Image (cartoon, rainbow, N blue to C red):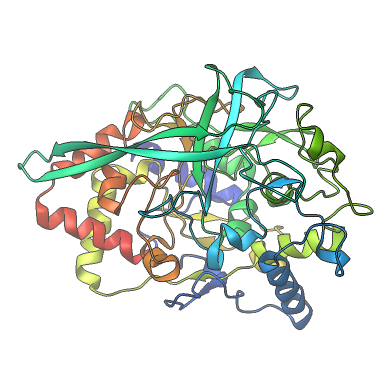
Length: 455
C-alpha cells in the first residue's frame, strides 16, 4: 500500500496509476453494462461505422474454423500441420476464459502446455525442446502425426483457516502421453496455461511504459514485501527487446505479437510476423506437408483481428449488494491485495485506436511480475520471469466467468475451483495478503469474495 500511494503522483503525469478509491469504470469509455453469456464479445460503444465493420470482420476471423490447405476458401485455409485448435474461439470460447479438463474429458480443450529445456534461445527466451518445440501440439492434419497428449492428475491438499474452517486445494501434476518423437527427457520443463479472457487488452497495451516501469520495486525499497518487476521480452514485430505485457508471464510485448504468436503456435498459421511453419527438425511429415501460397493469415485479416481485440467492450461492474461489495473492496485493500492488483490505470494520451486515448480504467493489475511462491511455481523461466514469477492477473470480469464460460476455474492453470481457492494459492510476495485474508472473519471473507464477483 505504501508503494502504491507513493507512486500515484508521479505516474499520473505520464498516464498510469490512478489513486485508489477513485470511481473508475472498468473499461473507461469501453465499458458496457453486459451481464449475459455474450458479455465478453460486444464492441465498445462509440466505434465509427468503418471501425465497427473492422471489428465485425475481426470477430469473424476470431471465430472462423480454419481448413487444411488447399481448400475452397483460400482466405481461411492453412491450418497446421500441427496445432491445438482450429479457431481462436476454440480456446477463448465467447472471448472468455479457458479451463482444465473436467470429469469425462481426456484432452485439453481450452488450455495448452508450454515446453522448454534448460537454457535460453537466441533472444533470451525459453529454450525450445529440440523435438517438440515450445508448445505441445496435440492435433495434426491428415498425414501428419500429432506431438502427443497432455494429461493432468489432481492431488488434493487439505487445509484450515485460523478459525478452524476447513478447505481443500488441488495441485496439478502434468503428464505427456504418447510422445510421437521419443521421450522428451528428464530435463523437460512444462507449464500448463488456460486461455485468458480477451476484453480490455487494448487498454492494457495503451498504458505508457514509463508508468509500468515506475511501479517496479525489485529491491523492495519501501519494505512492503512486494518487489514487482517488468518482464523484458523479444518483440518479433519491432525486432528488439521490449517491455512485456501479455500472457501469464508477460512474455509478449504487443497485441500484434501475441496474436501472431498464438496463430502460429495454436493453429499452425503463418503470418508476416511468423512466416515459418511450427515444425521441428525431427518432424519430417510436418515439414513436408502441403502449404498454400503466401502466409496463411493475411495482413489485412491479422490487423483487423488485432483491432477487434483492442476494442472489445469491458463489462461494467454488477452491483448486487453495494454495501457488502464496498466493504469487501475496503478489506481487499486493507489486507494488501491492492499492492499488486493496482485498482486503476490510465492509457496514454496518444494511444491508438483513438477510442483508447487517455482512458482511465480499472483492471486491478500493475502488469508486473511477482514471485508467487513455491505453490504456484512452474520452474520454467520465461525471459526475465523466473519459474516462481507471474504477471499480476487483471481481475475485471471475474464474476462473469460462470455466466460466459460455464465454469469457475481460476489461476493460470485452472487449478482453483473458486475465487476462495485462488486466493489461498497465493504465496511469495502475496503471502502477507493471503494471511490477511485467512485471518478475516467468515463474514468479512465472504464480503471480499462478493467484491471480486462484482468487478
